[in-house]
Amino acid sequence: MSRILQRVLEEGVKDNAPTKNLLKTIAAKYYNVCEISAQEAAYNLLSLRMTESSRGVIFVPTGLVGSRARMMKSKEALQNLPEFSSDVFCNGMVEYYSHRLDSLESLNFAGFCAYYQYFAKKRILIRRTNDKDIDEETNNINEEDEVEGGFLELKEGYGFIKRRKKAKVIRYYKPNAQKDSKLYSHHLVMLYLPWRDQFNEIDKQDCQSLFRQNKQAIEEAANEFSKLPD
Image (cartoon, rainbow, N blue to C red):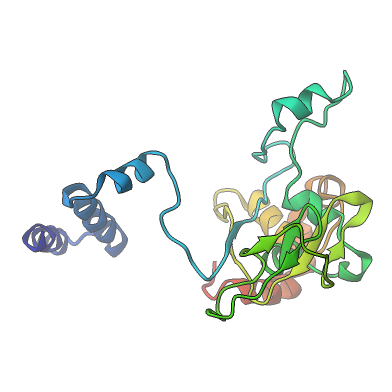
């Protein structure tokens, strides 16, 4: 194994390959020649999670309403809809954010996704005393216990949220600023400026103008979640 990786490294240095490409080549070569168990192979083929982390991660959708990937409701839920209903998609962070409390009016979308955990109904959260770095929200939940405080109810019965002790790492699709400046501005405005109605307040607006008008506020908000410049 070490000889194979050493040869890949030497070839990459000789060809003056970019560091990023070189690391990808080394990782691919290592993955292709190492031996793994049948269980690990099955997990890989089924795309099952093989690791746990004390830091939560969440993907934040920032696409246009009409192009954003969404999950369909279950077959049973679809069958129970009125005949001409178009409400065929499951709710997600965009819908939960739109129905946040008035006290969170100034909170931007990135902050909402990073700092708040969503629950369909109130649950008691049990502290994990053996690991202080692991968030309480995602572990040891007992739905039958008596409800405790700390939950905030979203508007119109959209569920509940609870503030996390440790923010999640947010991931998102970042358009190329040079190739599509309009979509890039839309992405920044949606993440770092507060809004209620995505379609009317963002999608239908001139996001490039909104970005220029709020450039300082957007950059300050972005610095909290990204230490590297775009």
